[in-house]
Length: 149
Image (cartoon, rainbow, N blue to C red; front, side, top):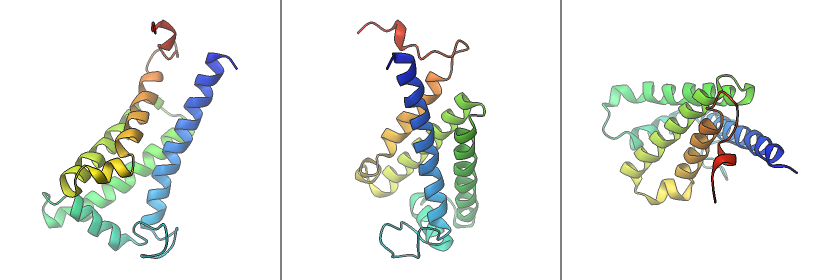
């Protein structure tokens, strides 16, 4: 397998797994993975998710929390769809990275550094940023071929 094929395969894998992660989180908050308290279910319903958003955004006024929950949900859906169809991939991946980084920062502030590290939120954000960089050039190259190891 040559480097171009490997890079293309890795990009597809990253796009699909990032999108799946966003869509899985959205599905969870609408109970599609099971009810609250079920095994491997983070929220299980919308209210539990809104309560989690309130914990992470302790600094935000209470009336704003539902809007933040909807904004995060809409952003995750749009990023996932953009990653799947490949529309404006550089910008969609950058938006996904910024969204994930904002989650990691609020998780750190509210819950401590262990929470975002345990869920690999920083690592996933880095993957989204890498996808944005790889898809940033007009010549559609990764830039890796110019790097001296």
